[in-house]
Length: 434
Image 1 (cartoon, rainbow, N blue to C red):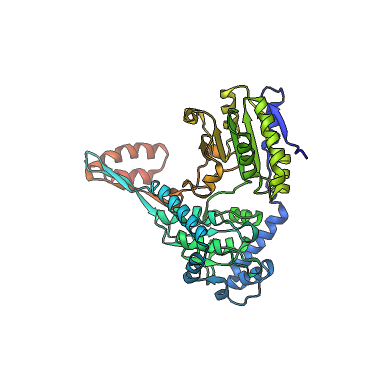
Image 2: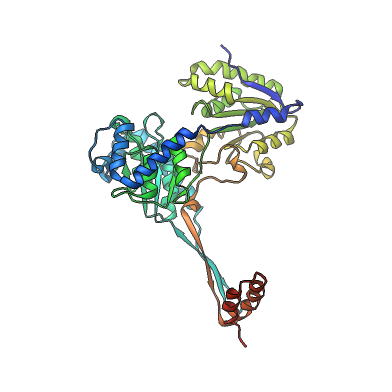
């Protein structure tokens, strides 16, 4: 049974329209979702723990009467890590160490310099005090997301990392808890949804207020994060996962088909696109897709994703392929080509770039080291992967000497009076030497 997947060429007259239709994606956060989220946030703000317990019992099929029943201690996290099968524990610890080593390279330090007159200018880099990490529960439990969100915060110097994770029906995911232990999470509350986001943003008697909330979630979580932005920082409002593979036709087509599957299996809205300058190769990959799809556990999700949002695109040449990649600005970009490094100077927009035939995007999801929290839906045009810098603040440093204040005061005075801000001008003028 073959799969329907759209196919077109960059040389078609309607290529721009085809691309527009392919890439369009609208959030399903309608008015009803927004009202539900607003009501939940209001309840959490006004009734705190009481409301949080009620929502948890309602949405997660729980029967708890106190917040003490919804918090896990460090011993439970460590027991989860220690209790894993040896191969899983080793894989988790290897991944955690690689992620930590990579993010150590991102640490920024304070700096300053002193001008000839003794004026000192600089920047003070300070970690946030406390951050919140949202981790999906149930079927969408991803321990890799715990590592990718918590470890950069830990490396940045954040003193307290608060994790929230729903446990529908009271079911704990031991691998997620083990990842929390490996990543240095401080406290864990088994709550989820918009109510967990609100609790982190505003605080309750039990859940401490945080400075920033990171981590993926469903549409209610995403809508809540958008609603509390300003009260706290957030990482991003992420759309469906996506991959763009650019191939010169010399990689095993089975490999590329599986790379496309690796994103399509996330959910029906995920997007997998292949661009090649070789029409016969597109045929070969399509044949591999048809051959391999019946072997996949999540074949129904993959089929829907590829049918609704996937594409095989024929590019005119290398420059055309690069132009298409920059137009898409993908979350994940695989350059499955000879000498991929030579392509880098012209790739302007991508969340993460996987270079060469052996670099499957899946390696980046788990253990390569760079962060897998990436900008989606074309936002790589102006956004970057999550990193240590997202958990640090920068304060400007200014300390004028008497001579420096005198000279700067003359310039400030002229500009302030030009803006008719007399107090600004006179404040600076007081420091001007006679």
